[in-house]
Amino acid sequence: MDRFIIEGGRSLKGKVAIEGVKNVILPMMCAALMADKGVTVLQNVPYLQDIRVLQKLINELGAKADFDPVKKTMTINAEKVDKTIAPYELVKQMRASFLLSGALLGRFGEFHISMPGGCAIGARPVNFHLYGFQKMGATVIDKEGLLGAHCRKLTGTTICLDYPSHTGTENLMMAAVLAHGETIIENAACEPEIKDFGNFLNAMGAQITGHGSPTIRIQGVKKLKAVTYLPIPDRIVAGTFMCAAAVTSGEIEIEGMDIDDLRIVMNKLEEMGTVFDIKISGSITVKGPRRLSAVDITTMPHPGFPTDLQPIIMACLSVADGVSLVRETVFENRFIHAAELNRMGAYIRVAGDKAVIVGVPSLIGAPVMCSDIRAGASLVIAALTAKGTSLVDRVYHIDRGYEKVETKLQALGAGITRGDDRD
Ligand code: EPU
View (tube, rainbow, N blue to C red):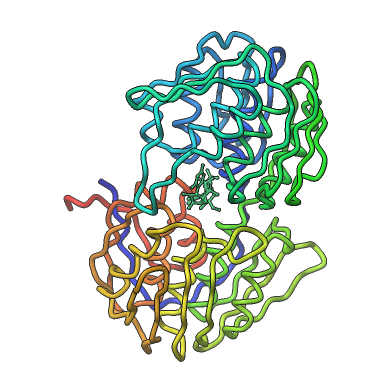
């Protein structure tokens, strides 16, 4: 298995461009299956492991999805989709494959998908998705690990979510766009990806308003058409690079980000001593202080502090001056990185949904192991600031969410190489 070998202690300097966000490209690839004619083209697509798995899955269903590595486009022709069963071997690799359910139910009136298991960060059930499908008239079947639903024609209704689930909102939006009548999703997720996803569906011919707010209204239409679309840049990847610059006392320019999508993260980094300069061109310069200061953080659905950046900012807080308190309210098990950071000399104590971080002057390079995408990114950030060499194992987790991160970090002056854990 691949590992990163990281020599810490270098300040990052230079420019980095941010690609499209995987967490909206995945639902867009699923929604592309609802256009029964033409070719959907998604631009600025990072060819990440999760995107490859979904590409295989939709090809298994009969679509033709091709990635062009030069143009960085994913083209999807869904004219010949003739299956509604997603095979377990692929589904088990990625929970987001459950996003196929809304698209298949919307276009074909049925789906059969293996129950996506839990993962390192939590149990992650899909009950809100199924509740919404049922409210729209679908019969849901849960048999021996296989989830299915069928309905001759979904009917618009009001669905009030217990919690603003990100993929839950996206799945219900897909089911509703071809339903009969109006669907209202209350307590919907408000992440920038939801807004962009609604814009994409509208470009396909859907009639959605309020996406990006807690109340989304969807007027069902008869057909959707294939479109060419440029998804928004990845705010979590951009936030990760901001943390990398901040913690290494570096200075980097981030191109292609909308600061509105990162407002709370930038506020926290500013409180910690980071200086931002927004250029007229739209790029953002991030300058880290000699040493960061401690802050308290509570994760929340958007516009709160994103859970996906919690492990990453915790790596920064582990060397900040003072004591920080981090509370994780979105996932029940998202502190696995704390034990690995402690192996590098951090002082973090976890109790339930809270972690207390007593900042140490510096971390020390050590062998550590990734447990999920963002925990992996957290260890890379810690290793960049640590004294000496770190060996970061199981980087396949990082590859699920960051395209060629070592190449981008090398270009910024980091001492990082990819190797094999048998070397
Ligand atoms: N939840 C339920 N029932 C449901 C759905 C969610 O109880 O039916 C709970 C979850 O267990 C969790 C909370 O609600 O405790 C929030 O989960 P949500 O559904 O919002 O998360 P998700 O849609 O499964 C997406 C991202 C995650 C990101 C979260 C939160 C994708 C493909 N995944 O997951 O991204 O952390 O929203 O913003 O969009 C990542 O990129 O590393 C990642 C984990």
